[in-house]
Length: 308
Image (cartoon, rainbow, N blue to C red; front, top):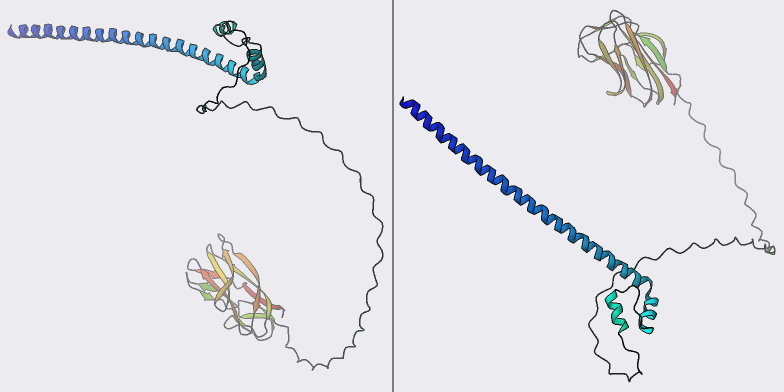
């Protein structure tokens, strides 16, 4: 029973607090509505004042524009005829009507002190652009002048001297043979290990002019300087890649890469134009990407002298 009494008291207290909060919120809403209404009233007054100022500004602008565009008319109309300008307002016109008639001209008074410098006037309006002038006519071609007199003849030049015959040259030395070249292929298949660089030996020579190529070492040593045509071809029968290089004195000057097909041999060839001096070394080297690469015996190496 005591518990029920406590709960009832709490419920009554909570209801009283909620009703008080609701009344406070309602009073705040009413106060806010009054503030908004007051702001709307002030906004209307500002709009009306702005409209009046805009009207006055437009009126003054019209008066100023008329004064700028009709200065002479205003001077004659207002000062000499003592009549108010049509652009003046009614109170000013009334003041002009009450002005007394003009009397006799009096003596000039003393020159007064110069007054302070007035404010700068508003800038004037830009004038209209002038009309373009007409294009002038093209003048007539002048009369050709008479031909001038012939000039004096020039002086005769001196006779040329007879040249003496040069001495007979010595007989030239007998030239070296220019027929240099060879063509060779491998006599057997070559098995390569992965990553190892090998000088390829094309030991089966078919054609040979001169003794500059050594089939045992696979190296050509130049004996006659000149420009040579070099070509080589490789055939591999595995599914791997072989990279070959044309080497001159240990430096690569040409490259051929051949990739074998699956179960089918593949052939690649390369050609190069090389300039060689005496004792230059030329050979073919090969490097497989993977071990177990076979170079077939149909691979060849050919060189011949093009010109000295």
